[in-house]
Image 1 (tube, rainbow, N blue to C red):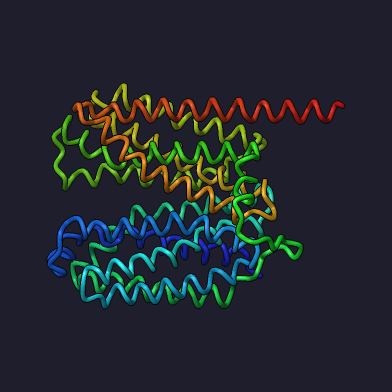
Image 2 (image 1 turned 45 degrees about the vertical axis):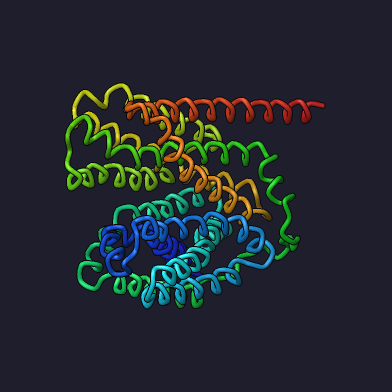
Length: 395
């Protein structure tokens, strides 16, 4: 069994599922014209995919733990392929909305299975390296998704974009069918879907810390994605065409941070690594608030630093969950993905209320305070748990 090959197949599968979310954003105006519809319904085709992706995380997790990794992945990928074909041939915006929802339901199983199987196949430092490679591949989505969509969409419209996703999904389905082993532990639990499975994760000190920090990190990250263009335009009068270039250092440094994460995780305790990298993450937000107005170069450097610290932190979070939960591994990953998606959704909404007074930095100040509070809470909770364990061992 070539576990490196399996790692790359799973990583690319998750990459294709992820780019499905934003691949056709460059041609949204064309989709609106093609279907003679409103901007609201056009943008809704992205939202329904994300909502389905988030909700299905907590549905798939327990089934993957009880039924098996491959048994859940293959049917879900088949649904993704069929739904992508449906998107390509949709003749109305409502048909596109339906198939986008089904596409999100199909794609939702891929990241849960991928991280779970990586946790099954790799141990110790190798697990950290494998998860960092996986996260690096996943981070490519924000860079290449719109580029691929813009190139294909310019030549063949939304049909070409979704046909590309259909063919890619089919190839990856066949590769997973051929090479992916069933890695569910033989003595794995077979309990039915129950809220107690999720409470097990939340009651665990490591699990709770990862969930809290994962939520606040992606709350902050998506505040950056949404409000950074307004700041660039407001302070430096950057045109929309050039704003996209400003995001490139952020995306590339997220990838670089993910790549370096597994290679630089040494003898430091993983929970301490998580707290240190999150602290660096929130400090980069504070630097952004304090220095972004100094110069555009200074702002870009700070944005790059922020992306680097985000990228470094994410593989550590996944590693902690896969290390901590053996028989609830997929449930833990699915719950983690779910709270991250909720953070993605809430960040821009809450920020929109804060920015109404015209202060574009207020959402970042609130995010930094929230993030700092999450780090303090996680540190104290982990310390309290360690002290309790030490007292129990002494007695």
